[in-house]
Length: 165
Image 1 (spheres, helix red, strand yellow):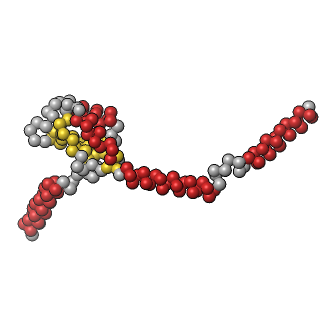
Image 2 (cartoon, helix red, strand yellow):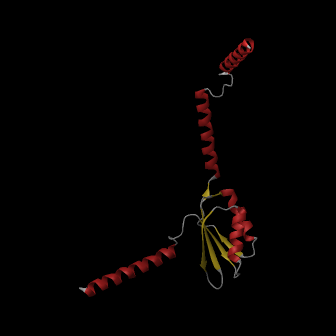
């Protein structure tokens, strides 16, 4: 019975190792919002790349350094939120100006659709205007008579107080 358990354990481990390698080869283990920076062989390369990312205001969730072929490294940066479509090209250009960065891979990067966001904001704006019209909040003169009567009443009570003295 012991050999059966040992054989089963070895088969399970072998299967898991093979599946893990297949997933790694297919790229299934990557997060959906990754930016990969390929760095030169420089002891300051990671620090320079992270400083550049911070100065550009890129929202970082997690940064991982992975060894690459030769003496280079890959800095995999998982972003906390998607970037806007018009920002990606400028960010890549700015990052490539740093001497420590040789290549920027944005294949796994999520990008916000600017047009869809504009449509959503217009729909929200129209909904808010409809609610304002429904609640009559656009009419500045709606409560003016109440405000004036309160002011007139307080002025009259102040006059009565002054006369009693």
